[in-house]
Length: 248
Image (cartoon, rainbow, N blue to C red; front, side, top):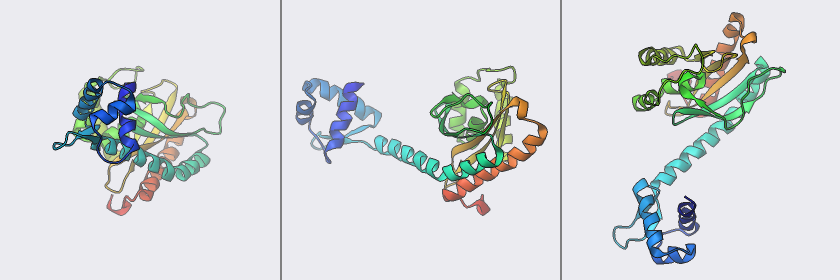
């Protein structure tokens, strides 16, 4: 792994294509070792090999990954003032989450004003299938992404976690129609979360706004107030990313 990363860095230092001999000299490795590493990276799309002279350069997979990271950074930057306002209006903990494989990862967290709040942190990963943020993102995802999540298994984290594949899939359809998802103890017994999607200019769900409260503060009255506030935050961030809400 370390040698592969060194190879990528060597290819990135100078534009254009690189030969095996030059790469081996720079990395201090045998040419056979560099050739093996490069071949593996070519197979994965991280490196491309010129069909004419056999030289190597960075591949488009890295460009795609970099674009994904850049998009998430843009989403976080555009979301920050909206999330700040949501926290100030509700006093509760607010997250911005993105889908990664079968999990969500928190890109942003803003603590609420109360002494008791959720036990979460920036960069924390949680299962997508039973979190409100994850189900919002899966509700707007392609069938292939949904199927991968289903294939990973619907592990029960609490007695409330939905583990029946058919009911789970129908639940995602309902979430998409509703415009929000509720986690009422499906991920943790003592927390409740409301989440809404963040859409980019193409209408793709690139993140989810989540607002999490302890179960003790989650009354029906609170739910009626929190759901529209979270939905509005999602719409506002989406508008900042170029999504036309009137064409939504």
